[in-house]
Amino acid sequence: MARLLWKGDERFPWLTRVGQWSEVAFLRLFWWFMSLLPAQKASALGARLFGWFGPRSAKHRHVVANLRMACSDLDDKQIQALARGVWRNIGSVVAEYPHLEKLVGKQGEPQFEVVCHNDDPAFRAAERPFIFVAAHLGNLYFSAAAIRQLGFPIDLVYSPLTNPYLDARVQDYLSVLDCGFITKQNALRPMLKALKQGRSVGLHVDVRVDDGELFPLLGEDATTTTGPAFLSVKTGVDIVPVRTERLPGARFRVTFFPALARAPEGCSDEQAIRFMTEQMNVVIGERIREHPDQWMCTKRRWPKLRMREKGAYDA
Image (cartoon, rainbow, N blue to C red; front, side, top):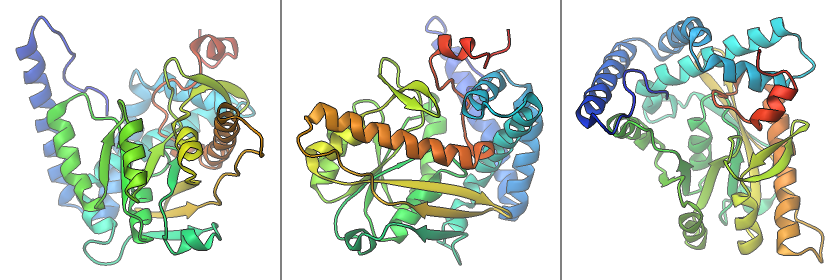
């Protein structure tokens, strides 16, 4: 979530705290109101509000630029329509926080379905841990709910919100997922420990990694995390792609795909890591292209210079 009512200023820490508290108070009021509505109506109202506000925000230029890179075959009118869809999806996600307990099935029937294209018997029986990778599509939290439904204990890698008071509130909502959380910074060692303990790990890998290696993504090189491939090569644990789709009426579909192929014999660890990361980006790119209007892409994904060369940013 973006900073709504504050900007970090080391000269005036008290002003930052006031802004953070105000932001939490505003969102608590928003979530209280959404909690009074049925989940479907709350989701629809959130979509409507963000569908109006998002295109008028500073973040909109990044959404449009990312979509121009990902969907270079579309004209600007189509891109703008997709961008409004992106904001509508984000609005639904924010409005659904108070309803997560009900939507994931803690109160009544879960509002998501699971589709499994992974025929590995060990996967279907949840006999051993896996490394799950996904893009920020639909409501990203339902991938965790589906993984838990399949019987996997899992730790999710996440980026704490810059407002610690808001982060604590969001974590309260996410406690219904019954999974652990690993902070993104210095996450490799905790992920390795979790895998050794028999727990799966999950990452959203469609974000820019500053100073990371370049790998092709949707036809253009983008800095990409090699963490999943590194873990897979070092531990022998398979990488399984996951997709979460938003369906009408605050419902969702979570699909599990076959594990990524391993590098050919004789490859060095470095070559194997590169081989698997390239595969991962192919699969993630395909998932984004399937539902670009559900891609939560509010931060620049590709190198700035290349995006400008491609005309993704307006002059």
